[in-house]
Image (cartoon, rainbow, N blue to C red; front, top):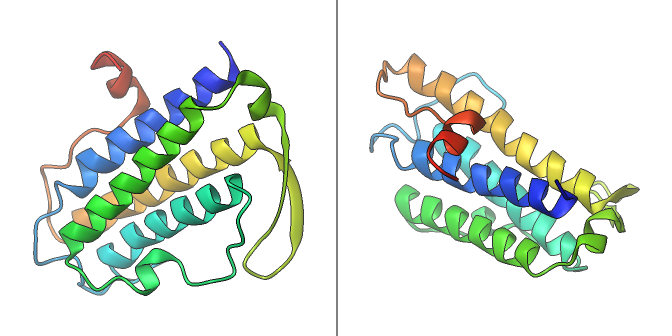
Length: 164
């Protein structure tokens, strides 16, 4: 399997899993306070959105020294989730448009502290998918803490079982 296909699988799964989980969050609990990496469901979900934005900007060769989308967003939580999912759609469209050689290309970028790094595009894409998966796991834990019992399965194998 090619790096392009693996990347499309990972990010297709990521988009699917985020939609399943994030749209199943009951309204009214998104701003409850927790002890976690991010102090609410909203902040955790929006962190995923911001990371998608940062990395897509970098993949396009753009500067990311300005405020990510959630920092200026004033809509509802559900509207924010729709924006996050649209950003993931953009990632998939972008990846589809690339040839196989692109995924072995080196990307040099600066993090938010202005430290410079170089990685292959494929490694960056792996990181982005795993980053989102990590924070989805945190969201599941937060949902369990408020008593949620109907949490959709978002495992990669379920994605494949459903014909993706």
